Image 1 (cartoon, rainbow, N blue to C red):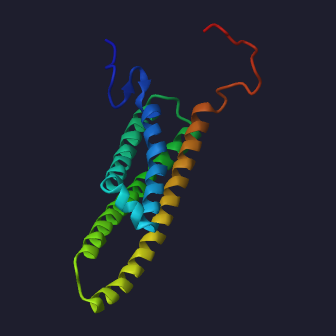
Image 2 (tube, helix red, strand yellow):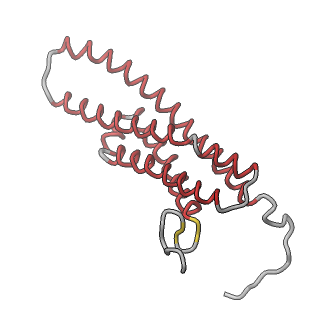
Length: 184
């Protein structure tokens, strides 16, 4: 009997991993950019609103899906050092995705709180002391956001590069074969 047309392992006859990784490839850098933009420019975080943490959640959810589908695929291909290296690197992305999600939620939450505080009248002395501590926290969030975003993007690149090498190493000719069909 034919396998299911769609499952977490196979989608329409193709290994799901090769499809799901495209979500990771797009969502991790997009989340990284959104987190850094929101951390540096609170106005950007306000404009993104709830989209920022939702994007972080989608990114976080896509990583274990790709990993699980990749583990299935690893069991169904000839194992070699390149495949093992790719799998090892892939296992390290989840903490980066979790960091992006936590930062996205923190930026969204603090941006909402600061917007609410600006609309509520308060004492000037309290606001001044609060402003200094808020600046320290904001600088720390910016530095942390840039670090986590850079780490996540670099990790996605390294994982993708190793996956491409595992899939394509010796799988094509470096010279044209001369056989090209122009039938459309």
